[in-house]
Structure formats: structure tokens, C-alpha cells
Image (cartoon, rainbow, N blue to C red; front, side, top):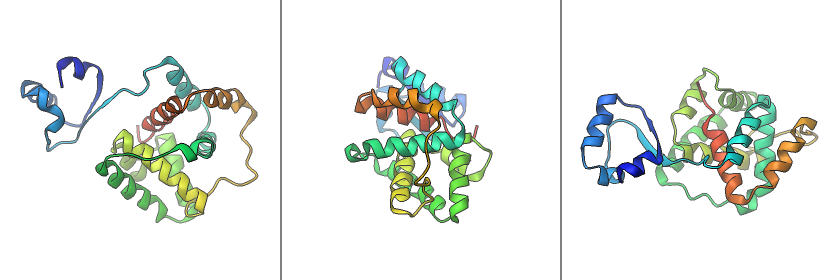
Length: 194
């Protein structure tokens, strides 16, 4: 990966500045093939267009339960088009976090989801914050599928989104599939302990 490639990527690092300097001094062209002892994740930015950024900002202004419901209804709207293609490591970490949530009693399952969305200072929220963006998206996909089959607390069947979400929902429905995925990935990436 070239230096230009590094600039075009978001770099989320949980290591010291000296580790980063050492990394940049080493063979940068083989960066993608290196294995590091500290967690390092490099991925392309996924909020590249202003529509996605504006949508995420608007989404974050809704209360926690409304955000959860919007994720649920968004999933229902595009579920037939979804084909997870995450790396095995992302699937494994997503599965571990998902299994932790599913093992909780129903009310605590909901609270765990609320904690993640709200960025609460809880164990599950910190665990979520530590996983990759792909794993975060995978966690929500797994939770949505589990809600659908009743394994995880479901949105009540008579639940109606608040009226103030109408413009937002129409805006999201107007996005193409890739933009919707970018929006969802961007929205769930920001979640987790602050």
C-alpha cells in the first residue's frame, strides 16, 4: 500500500505513536500482509458522500429506541438482497459478541443493544467498540435475523415509527443498495462505548 493509499484510508489504531512510526518506516508496500501484535485495522472510508454523512447525522439525532427500530425496519426492507461476505475473523468476532448478547435474558438483550447504540459505559458496549467495522455490521445482521426468528427480543408487532422519522425513512429508501449499506455501516460503526 502506498503512502497515498494510507492517506485515502481511515486508520484506527490501538497502539502507540512509536509503533505507527515504526510501521511507516517498514515496508509500507506490504502493509496489508503484515501481522501485528497490537490491534491494527485499516479500511477504506465508507462515508464518502455527503448524503451518507447527512443521513448518519440525522439518524443519530433520534432516540436510542427509534434508532434500534430504524435498523430493524431497514433490515426488513433489504434483507433479501443481503449476502454477508465478511472475512472469517470479522465473522468470528461478530459471532462471539452476538453469542454473548443472545445468552442474556430477553430484557438484558434489549438493554445490551440500547447500551451499544447509546455508547454506554458497559462491558458489552466496550466489546462492541473494539471490533472491526465489518464485524459491527455483521453483529447487527445476526441480531436482526435472530429477532426475525424470535431468538432475540423483537420489536413489538404493533410498533409504529414516530412521525418525525418519515422524511428520514423516505430519504434512506431513495438511496441505492450500496448507499444504504454504506449508511448502515457508517451508523453502526459510530456505536459503542465512547
